Length: 250
Image 1 (tube, rainbow, N blue to C red):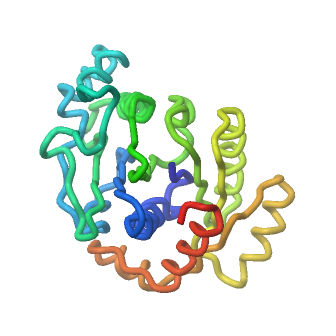
Image 2 (cartoon, helix red, strand yellow; image 1 turned 90 degrees about the vertical axis):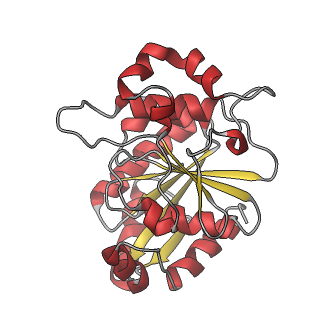
């Protein structure tokens, strides 16, 4: 799970991670951010139908309940299999990365995102990956997913820090959550420049937060995010690759 405050760069890092991991695994990217609009374009994939639609819509999620949601999505072999998700609810990038979307808030007065986080939690808890598969989860901003216990179903949490005190404070909460849940935990700094690197290291050390890598500010990412198309990256891609190798995912 890729987590952090809004605007820290979770989606960009999720896409870059997915591209790199796709060289070794069959990779899927789960969009569990109810606000994100451009992730499919960043990945250069079609927008799949949200899983919440397959289950009858947002208002039905809590009525259906965890057990019946799992049954509705599981295969004959048991558990939820990424390769067996309903047709139309997975799209593919040019690299073969599968994109899955939980749901989006789009209408005035439709209510909060709680059903989406609940569905994400059930999905991850009942997911069965093969040895060749990897799932990257682009989460919603902040810690609402912590309150819903979404982390229960993941193997590790990667907290993204940008050059703000708020993001460091949030990373501490995510670290404590991961440790209590027995999950692996990593912290990376995004949009890093020489002017802020030392300050972030000092502040993180005070909070007993280990930094596992720095991702440099990349104008290619900045411009492609502004244009709203396929995500382009130069030095940031090299930094993400180095981090994945360092933490043992590549």
